[in-house]
Length: 185
Image (cartoon, rainbow, N blue to C red; front, side, top):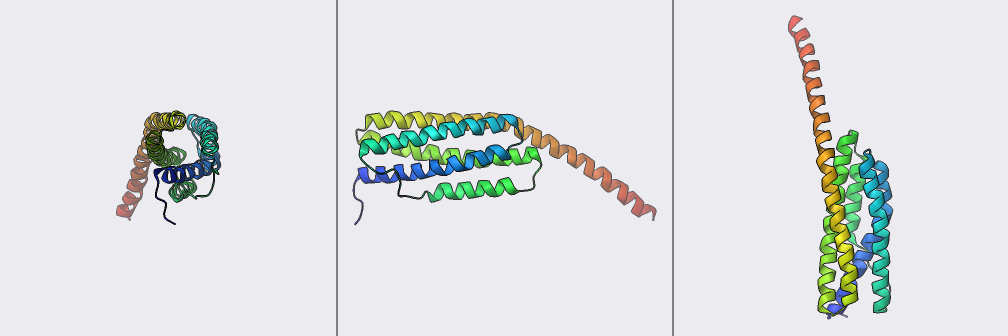
């Protein structure tokens, strides 16, 4: 039977976000563990605490709607989490791995911001003012997490660039030495 109401779409999108958040509760500790930078690790640990609150807020909304909080797998978040897991397994230097993890985490944050913006708009149209407030609180925290990652990226990306530059200056010297010996032979 086709779903034909905004309320049904709203509930469907809430279920999608709920599953996305529960996937993140499992992924964030892995991201924290893979982070070499202490501030980045702490940011992931803090966002894990917030993500647990996001799950609780969504459960509160489902309870108010008289709906079950499960039932839909978020394929978008599943893909983002898999991509992030693959990034963490790459053989990067610590600085480059941290930069890559930040990129993966920011894709997640932007995905969540889009989802929360959508359900907040639906809640407004449905007159669910208490839901709007809860969803805005979560949306604000997602935006703050993204800003924190951006701040950390400025420092970490610079460190990754410097480390890469140091490797480049070492590599040509080694190459020059071997080419001189080839010319001498």
